[in-house]
Length: 188
Length: 291
Image (cartoon, rainbow over all chains, first blue to last red; front, side, top):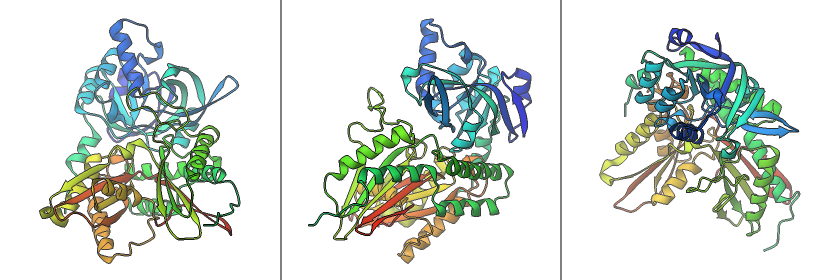
């Protein structure tokens, strides 16, 4: 398993090969539908967004968090279905220079095109592996936009070997999902 | 009708069911995942199955929900009961949300405002099956949105026949790709009316997959679909491989002579379920039942 350190550089992103298994350490933020909608809304209105979004590793995840005293504890934090953000992601990638998206199930051709344009990689986490993945996110840096609710808020972590992650869409326009889909056997 | 004297409050039993379902993967599914890993030759697929099994062990050991999407719980109440059970279930769910904890998932469909306690208008969802039995059986099935969003209903033409049904099921699974977190269970409803058909597809997920279908023809059809879907190469998480489904389960009902309804409800690998059979003798817990 190749170990990567965030923030990721363009060279590192470009070096990743489809099917390679990696893990990431360093700053990671979460974002789902509502976080995407708000971030893009703020950009259009010229409002300030949390600085961590720029050049980030964006994890499609709505974790279970509890607060003990003034400390946040992550209970479960697996990936959510990335395809729900298909319409919002190309603009997110272009506006904030997102370097890596961690999610499950893959994303559209439009997202793949934006990734190629700016240098971004899509890493597939194992869906449902919420407890194992939460262990790698034990260092919670904080939360933004908590009013969106626990699942939709933007959580900030310092990841310690978040993984295993499969390089499923690279920054050169290749997609493992597309390859699998093309070779599917449909027999009745 | 004499009231059943409960060994512990129903609210507590509902709480126990939610904890059991969330933290411990049903054994039948665990075994099926192990079997999948043993025949998988694709490295990526093998890594996904390994990550799943590693996670299952940690969740059970730590007593934490195995998936952060603790879903919407669907309750099935069978046997002898009265209307107070609705409140007991709601109370148990509210406390479980706070104490296990579960992720608050329920929102108003228009304002998207979260109730914070997994309740709200129309919640919790409970199906009642009254029988003459001397027990009450409460079963909970947890459905996350990743798999639930892939539910499909086809109102086919009778002329489409069994071939049409098979094509609809296979297409539904393959078009869903990695989104419903394969490898899981494919629940199929066949016949009935539109609403009944979708309900049957979900009910099909409640029975442990090592309990064979009593209808030999349906058993054959389940087996055929299992082989055909796993031949596809979609694999765990849609990343390629030979383990796409752990089982196909079919429930049928008579339908209109002019209809052929078929519904698909996919259960992710974490098809979480638990049942409690409550009688004078006490409470018996299990992780699935035959409705």
